[in-house]
Picture (cartoon, one colour):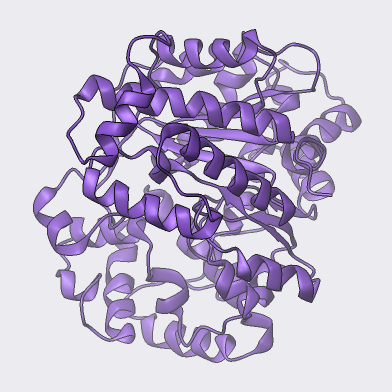
Length: 467
């Protein structure tokens, strides 16, 4: 059976087809948030087989395989790469209506020109053809990026990372510009005193700052922000359940840090205060550098304690949380804005019930200084599928200006994830096309073509300072 991924996949009207094919299909990709390995890019890594580039680290696929009853041996265990792939091929026909069904066949078609449905019957031929392709220079790490017309991308990096691979990429002056993103969540993860103090030692080593008090911690983090900026970093990112807000004098931050250094336990409120206080300091640093801060809010992580102990974090046991978001988000943004130190901000929501909360909240802090300064980020994680994308686009349209949106990203660890930009572009063009067909928008190809082009590429190019 041949693939259902036709030239007009997801495009239901003639106007949508025109928007996609004539205005956005060939635009370069700016992927401003992902979890790709900068080392793989620097070394132009060649993957031995499709399991290594496609299944390794992909907890979306792992969750589906577990749901289908596949033994962990074939997911994260010691089965061979081919055995793992064959098990995934067995599952794929039963992922219908899950976004994995679309992504799987879109990726096989775009990277390997495979136009048949993946199943147990086709698995052997798909394995052989993809293995043959991956031996070619065109399918190295950089080759895969160039194949998808990726212009620039931003990885996700801890403050203690050396960024040596980013510097190597810059020296090579590769076509795909690669930049680090400052992800300092571990710098205030004081829930585990032992692990946190070990982290402080790492931070001391890379900054040559002896971190004896809270002022030293802020100084060390500032040095790393400065360093990231020198290497090309222009974004920061935080992955949090929720923000917290306290009056500044609720606790004495200096005393809290002394307790941390002494490995004395903090109360839950003290932990939250420490995080909140540090986030404000960081937010001011980002503003001073002209950076964009990203806030990924709403995930409840590591729910399955038994399998967490066995497999570790980031293995497919996270989900949508139902945290209170509005008040603390308002206070966080307002604290920075009150001193005119609020950086460009992208807020990503994981709970769809909070879409309108997030979309209306960012509107409070647009001040006319920058087009689209405050962004309601693209549908994220469990929501980056057709229904989730449409809901995010509709909410943003209703509560803000869709025309100012900086568009899609992969948020992925896989070099085969970039057709998600195509997926988004098709969904966007179809949404606009349907509005035209329904008489809800004028049949103005030039104007609407510019808007979708801006959303898919030009807004991001102008928003981020990658020069």
